[in-house]
Length: 292
Image 1 (tube, rainbow, N blue to C red):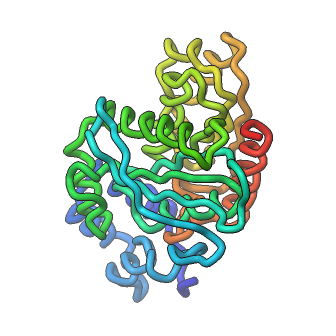
Image 2 (cartoon, rainbow, N blue to C red):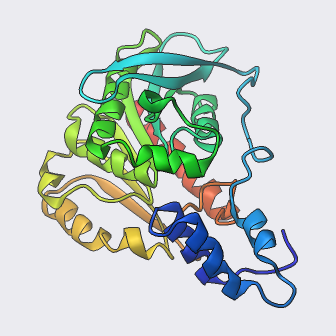
């Protein structure tokens, strides 16, 4: 931890930057207001931007897992998509599956790590890269966000639906498949619940909601994870919950106190260790309940 505490407004600014409401120049310029008392803008940036190098929990070469890059067809989306596929090395027989959906910047190292964590919990996971048609995650989030803005989000939704179909038919999968996603991936998770009739479970982390008119199509049970300070995403929750109740859909919702959007991401200071641990434990327990 640095020898300073950032104002909540800095986290709000970062959220605007990470979701393309302001560009990097505007972000840096507005951070100058908070560079006081010996605190510099470079110090704030070093602290608040992702640190993928030092924050991997399950490495790509973890000997407990079989992890490989595969390619699958997405005829309604990007055509050919690359993805990380991972499952426990010592597993026998078939495993339930999880589609892991990235944020708005492609399959960065953090989400690939989350995919491996899911595999280590006893699942076969697929973590697609929606930037595959544009060359894949470019190695940094700024360029990743720029690339993802070039793609139509409904075509990307088709890419993740195609990943579900690929995993469901995989010879190591039982055919029971759920989805977990973060930010943009949370929206994908909600949309897959509404569009994929045989999805077994969905866990959106701080994701935009599906249109209320599509709620009657939801068959999968939902576990919805919210950050208390995430005004942007939380603004749509009341209407969504009313629709879920009206149509008697199965859901559990948790809002974690004193957390920001992205609290599960351990590569930035938005990370809240206690909330992230609890949310992930709940996620794995939910999948074990509904996929086994």
